[in-house]
Length: 104
Image 1 (cartoon, one colour):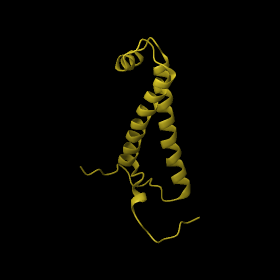
Image 2 (tube, rainbow, N blue to C red):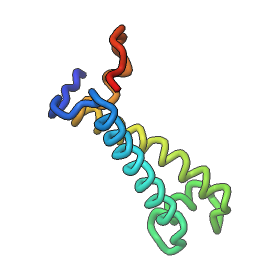
Image 3 (cartoon, rainbow, N blue to C red):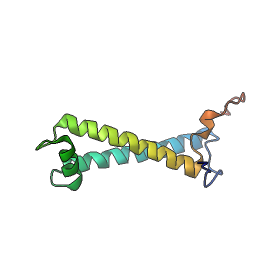
């Protein structure tokens, strides 16, 4: 499947734009991870109950919560990077080799 960006006008062509887009990605991943962790800390919530049945325990240990939060945050980060690629063509320049120096 070929993906094309919705806009090519806000690509990471300069340092300010690159830092802005990277900050946007980092913030989205951190917010996703914190939200997952908060859902896993609520013992009366649906997500906690579902994960608890997957582990087959009566109560999740701290290690089980950390492992689950890490795995879901990893896949959430993958989705964030795919969305950023689809919207802003973020990360596309990492695959292109150019001999041009970086404009400071």
